[in-house]
Length: 305
Image (cartoon, rainbow, N blue to C red; front, side, top):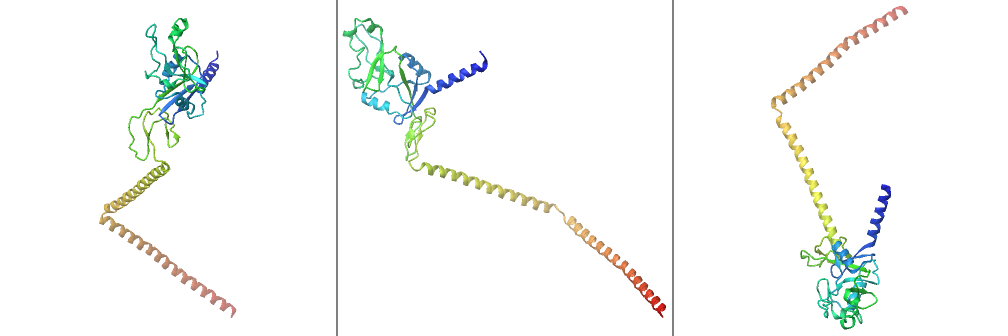
């Protein structure tokens, strides 16, 4: 296979995988959910969630109707399937005539009112199923059905959609008295924070209406500091230039100053002398010209006479 073709296939696989995995943020209890279009058995789904640092969703302390309301009202554009695995199952059989209590993966017991009507109906009645081979060799897990107000029990080996979750826990408390302490996956004044649960830290919300003002105030403070720094730099440059000029003048000796003045005076006298010499040289020439003109005039008059 050509390298270019291999790269194209790998890229398509990556794109298809990314497109099949969706994250959903809860706005009420700091949970972040992972949903994929794949179908897996309950055990495979559990392993998939663990590989992505999540667990199958657990909803202890909720009735069936509360679970339905919670799950079908998750934010985001992802539409959950009609039914999917949750993180609960029927424990392994403790004895031939006794089964353990239904529980979530965290060992929290599943409430009686969490079940849908007439559920669980597969592994509940040992007296009815104890002679069947299917009962002895089959484990049952928790399945949520959007059309029912509660949980179903279903064969764990069947492939179904599933829902994973992780909960953001704050590492520090908020000192912002005007706001509230929200998890990374929770909305801050109605806006979902972009980093999901990655920060696993506590975010303090600024009270509604003051978020924009706080940003503008911060920008104004930064600009003011920059202007002050610029003014100080200009002042220091001017001060340094002035000090250098004063130092240069101080380094000049009185003799050097006098010598400079004398040289200038001598130069002026020399220039004056040159001008005077040229003027005096021009005077005789002017007289000679005058005598020549008179002689020419006399000669002309004599010839006319």
